[in-house]
Each structure stands twice: as structure tokens, then as C-alpha cells.
Image (cartoon, rainbow, N blue to C red; front, side, top):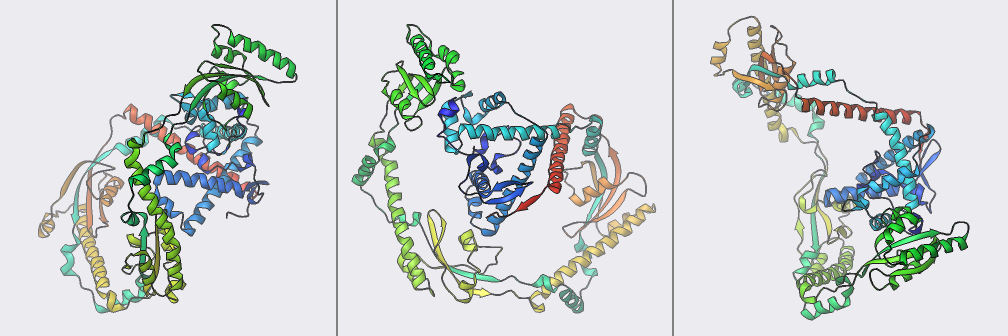
Length: 631
């Protein structure tokens, strides 16, 4: 019943409170529960619509979660139109997958009872204080996120129903101990080998590269010598921090700010109440008689209000806590309920019968904390900084219009913008679209830096607000179009590349000769001595994390210890060449119990994930899906 009393509280639940739900709320829309003033559909899944409102809600939830987790870097990315479009598409695809699972759960008749919903709500950490479910927190979270208790229960019912299906799918995954053990034995196996890392530089004197070869390479790879278009920007920027240096504030101004905003430095009066609710039912007269009987019980000497509330209150959620509603504030409850609650003057006072649309209430004031005002002296320093910041912000916003006018009225130069702001004109070096200098590395700048108006017409940009406290105007001061570099510009680069390839191939050929000799049972010591090379003996090399180059480690674990199958030549990413000879394999005697347990968990989780993804993919392939809009 408490849910009905609190029907003014609404919103999608924060991501942190849905740990029990397998489908992340971060990308789950709740528009179908909240209703929408716009019936426009973003997609249709087997005849059921996903509305644009649902997509917007899911998008905002996921975006907020990412901005909270990653900060300004991801917040700035959302100003990029391409990134934004891709992100919204991904959100819609997730909603489609969620809808398919929801439909399948409904089709096979999965259900969740009211009692399961109630217990699930009690277990959500975001509704708890000191480990206990808290009504006021429950109400505040739902209100902040625009849920009503009723719509949240229905949302949770849908999610828990689909979770049943998900658990059915993933719960059937398992891993055999023998299977896991076999894989772990392979992973934990070590090998001993002797290796040579052959420097290609040893063969540099043996190779030559001709001008003809350079030209042939150039002609065959012309596209790789294409440059990207480049711009050089000039800009004027100003921030609130820049402006604060020019601000001053008097103690009188700080005191005035304190007095004008005194409520911000006061704690609110807090009233903690408990209540007992007697519902009207079908007979209001009988309900009133029952309420009067309960009132007489709670006002009797020595009566335990909490015990009586737990036994007689129709508000089942608060009844479990002795009727406790925690601390309340005006505006959270119906007028008659609040008037009665705030008329109680001392802890322990009990109201008479209070009638609301839900029934008769008996209200008890259990705790009263009066308002407290923080003295001016305690926060004067903090307030001074705030007033300085406020003055700088006022100047910032005043300059915004002036900058915009200067950039527009003198579009061929930044001189007027510089004069208006008293800030210098700064020039960047040339850069490509993929490599913005840090000083202009903002999505808002990315959206205009290569715009034809700035490049071809030489105009200033509009004012760009790159953050809440910084803005700038940019212009293209120089431009280099895309072109193909001439041969003489890249000849040295090609020469170096071809020389590297030839020297590595020469090293490979030499190493292959050593390999052939080894396989024929011949001695190679003289050949190694001639190159001043020695074998490197590696004992008990692990499959992962050793100090041998990755390519050589991979080769060692691919070889067989059998003669004629234990030697390999590999090229290295450094340009060098490796020669490896596998000498022995060290098997694991026993797999540790902890490794086996964690391996089984990992294998099972991986199988569960693949099974779930395959199931969604199968549903998608058979579904009638139409995408109308993601904007």
C-alpha cells in the first residue's frame, strides 16, 4: 500500500541498483511503463513497438553511466555526431535484443509473483541504509529516476521474468573436470629450448637496393603515399579561470551573498515518522471504527506503536519496520497527511485519525531534528571563492555574445575577437583529422575544423562552447589538400624499408641453412662462430609471460619434441629472425584445486555467454524486425 501512497514519485532506476537483473538497466528503456506523449516508434519487434521515448531514455541512462565512470573524456565524445549516431544505434540494437528475450519469456509462460517482487526490492542495495531496507531511500531513488512504485514493480517483474529465461539458458552450461584439467595442463606446461635471435643488421652489407627497385615499389604502392588533408588553425579561447584572475570581491559582497542564500547554509528540519494505515475497503464506516480501535491501542499507556503497526497496518512495506517511514519533507505526501505530521511538536506525539484517499492514518513523530544555520565565519573563505567564481561566470556569459558578434561581423580575422576578450590569437601547427593538437582537441572543433566554409571561404567559426567554462572561435589559417607524395619525397623511406626487408630475408635464408644442417645432424658451431652468435638456453619457459620474444615462444609451443619436428625459423616484428630448437617438454604433475575451480568457472561462464548470444542471434534471425528511426 505504501507504493500507492507514494505514487507521485517517478523514474528509470539508476544502473547501480539492478545487480540482480541479467539485462543491464543501462540500456533498458522504461517508456512502456511511464507512458509517452509521443507514440512515434523507433522499431517494431514481432509487432511490438520500441518507442523513440524508450530509446531516448535508454540512451540517457547509458550515457550518464559512462560519463560518471569515464568523466569529461567520454562526455566530450558525445559532441561528435558520428560517435553519437553509432552509440544510439547500439542502444537500439540492445533494446531489440531485450524485447526478443522478453517476448520469449512471456511465450513460454514464465511468471514472477508479487512476493518475489517485494523480496527483490528489499534486497536492492540502493534502497538500504546500514544494510537495512529504508522506505525514504526507496522513495527518493524512485522519485529521482522518475519511477512510480507501481511502474517500478512492473519493470522489475519484466526484468526478473526475462532473468528466469536467461538463467535457464545459462544454467544449463557446464564444464567437465577432465576437459578443464586437460586444458589447464596444456596452459601450465613449460618447455625447454635453445634459441638464437639473429639481428638482420648482420646482413646489411650483403644486400643492395637499386633505384629501379625503389621506383617499382613506389609505383606499386602509390596509395600508401597519399597524404591526408591538413589544416593549420588560429584560435582565440577564453575560460572562467582566465576571467577569475581579473575579479575582486569585498567582504560586504560575500556577506550579502550569504544572507541572500541563507537557506543553502541551513539544515532542513527533519521529522521521522511512523504510521499505521487502515484502508477504507468496501465499508468506510467500518474502517473508521477499526482505525479508532487501533488509535486507542497505540495511545494506551505502555503501548508499543511499532508492534501494533507491524500487526495492524495495511502498508505492508513500512509495517515490516514497525510503520517507520524515515525522515519526511513537505511535498512528498498528501496535504492532510503532511499537515498532521508537521503539527506534531515533540518526539513521541501521536496524531488522531488522518483521512487521505488511501484510508485512515495514525501518525507518530519518532524523531525531530531542528534546522541549524552554519555561521558566516565558518564558510567565509569558501563563499569568497564562490562569489569570485560567480562574477567570472557573469563576465564569461557576457563575453559570449560579444565574441559571437565579433566573429560574425569581422569574419576574415580574429583580431576583433582578440580585442573583445583581451586574449591572444594562437596558431597551431599543421595537423590531420586523426591527430588534433591538445589545445584544440575538442569534438566541437573537430566538427568544424575541416568545414568548407572555414577552408574555402576563410571565415571564422561560430563561437564554440567546448565545456561549461570554456569557449573559443577558430579559423583555418592555412590548408594543405590531400595529395600523393612525390618519389623524391619518399625515396629515403622506401630505401630503408626495402633494405630492411632484404636484410631480414637474408637472415631468414641463413637461419634456414642452419636449421637444415641441424636436421641433417651436422655441426653448426663454426657457422655460429663466424657470425659471433651463441645459443641461448631457455629452461622451463611458460606459455605466457616469458622473456623470449612472443613469436619465438609461440613457435616453441607449436613444435613437437620428436626429431625432425623440433626446429623452426620465425620472423620477428622487430625485423630480426629467430631460430628455435625444442629440447624437452615439462608436464604438470598436478593441477591445483584452486586453479581447477577457477578454470571450471571460467569455462562455464564462457559457455553461458556464448549460449546466450547464440540464443539471441537465433531469435533475431527468426524475428520480424523493422527499424523506423533512431533519431
